[in-house]
Amino acid sequence: MDLMTRKYNLIEQLFAIKKESVLEALEITLKKEREAIEEISDMNKKILDNRLDSYNNSPNDLLNWNDVKENW
Image (tube, rainbow, N blue to C red):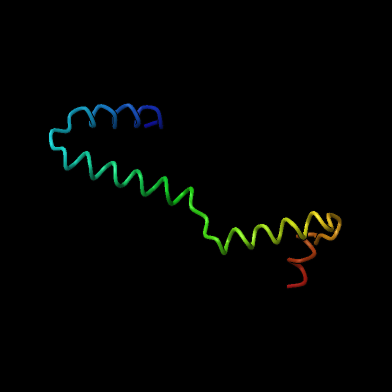
């Protein structure tokens, strides 16, 4: 079953929900999923910022991936 069909089927099932508690549980689950995707810890942001700064300061100071694989 393709993604669009699955989404359509899910929407149909949502319309059939009778209990508000079921809908609330689904809303909480979807909210947690969105937050997990959007959330990057401060520590990870700092690491990414440091790496970006390092690259911007020395864009030619890179390692070739094949060389790294061979030497490790």
